[in-house]
Image (cartoon, rainbow over all chains, first blue to last red; front, side):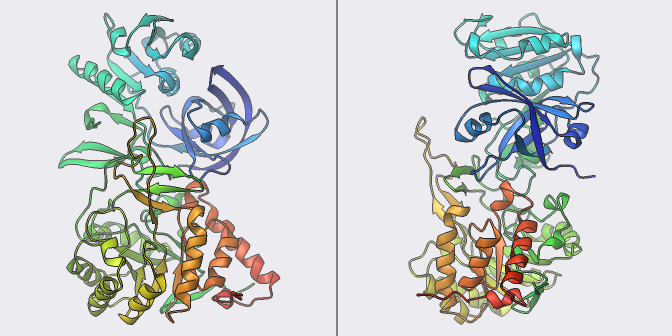
Length: 255
Length: 303
C-alpha cells in the first residue's frame, strides 16, 4: 500500500468559522483510512508552483472524510478558500509522521496558538476528558474550535492578546495549576519554544508540530529544513518527512 | 507507437524523460507514486565528496510562475550514496545519473574516480549550483574555468560525462563550445537562475541565504533559448531542462535542440507529471507521423 498519494476529493462541507479561517470537509476515503493526527496534506492551488500544507484537523475513516481548518495567509490560501461545496480539491496525503499519542489514560495538555490549534483537535480525540486545551488567539473573533474540544470532553483554557476573550496574555500563562503528563503543541515558534521549556521544567515529554516553507512534502527536495539535535551533533532534518511532529528535546531553537 | 528510446552519449534511455537533480532525492520518495522505470533516467541529488548539512532555513520561496531554492547541496556524501542509495536505485529499471559538485577541482576528480568504479550510468558535473559559497557556479561562469574542470575530470572519469551549465553567464554558446572542446560527452542545461525575494514586513530576504536559484515555468523560455543557442555551437547531445511542465514544453525543448529533457519543479505541483508528459509526447509523435522521438531534436525552423 502507498504511504501517500495524490487524490481528487470533493468538498462535502465548507464554512468560514472565524474571519479568514475556513473549515473544509473533504471526501478522501483512502487517505482517511490511514491518516493519523498531526499528519498533513498538500493542497494543489491552480496556477501556483507550490502546494499548500494544511494539517489534518479531523479524521473520519468510516465516513471517508478528512477535515481541514486553515487561515487565509496569502494568495494561495485565498484561492483555496474560494473553492465551494461540491467542487473538487487535489491533495497529496497523508504526509509526515503525526503525533504519538502513547497511553491515552494519561493527562494530555494540548497547547496551541491561533491556526496551530486545528491539528490538536485530532490529537485530543483519543484522550477525551483526559485532555485540556490551552490555546491563545489574537482576539475574541479569532477563537476557533473551542466547542469542538469541549464536545470531546476536553477542558479548555483560552487566552487572547487583547483580553477580549478568556485571559489576556500568553498560552504559557494558562498553565498555572494545571497538571499533565504529556504535551502536544502547535503554533508560532516562540510559543512552541516557551511551551517546550515549560514542559521540560516539569519533566513532562512534549511533542511539537513545526512549520517551514515546503515544496515536495515527501522528503525528496530537502526544502523544509529544521535544525535537530542528533547523537553525533546537530543536523538539518526535513519538516515534511522527519516531522512535522518532533520530540521538543530534539529541536535546536533558532531565530 | 513511436520509438521513445534515446541514446545519450552511449547511455541507452528508454524514453527522453529524466528526473532533474535536486528535486527527486535518490528516488525513493517518488517510488511511492509509480515505478521509477517510468523515467528514462534519474539524476540524483547533487553529491559532494563529504557529507554536507545544507543551508539554514528558509530555503524555499514561491515566485510568480516558479520558486527559489537555496538548499545548499545537503547530501550524505558520495560514499554513503554508493553504499546505501545506489544499489536500490540501480535496481529500479532506469538509467542512473550521478550529479556531483565540489569546491575544488580535486573534489570533482576524486568523485568521478569513485563513481567510475560503480554501477552509475553517467556523471553529471554540477558546475552551476548558485547556492554554495565556493565552487559550484564559480567553475561554470567562465569559459576557461568550465573547460578546465571538464578536462581535468574527463581524464579521470571512465563514465560518460555530462556537464550541467549555468544560465548566469553572458554567452551560453561560448561556454557550451568550450566544455565540448574540453571533452564533455553531453551537456545539460540550464541550472537555476540566481534570484531573490524580500519580506516587506521584516525587510529581510525571504531566503536565509539571501539569494537562491529560480526554477519553474517562469524560466522555461530562457532555458529554451539557451538550448537553441548551444545546439548551434556543439555536436554533443544536449539534455534540456528549466521549467518544463507539460508535454508541449518537452516537445519545444526537443525541437530547440535537446536530445532528452529533465523535469523537476513540476513534480512538486504534480508528482504524476512524467506520466502525463510521456503520454502527450506519444500522441504528438503519432499525430505528426514521427517514427521516433529523436526525429524532433533540433527540428525547429527558425525565421
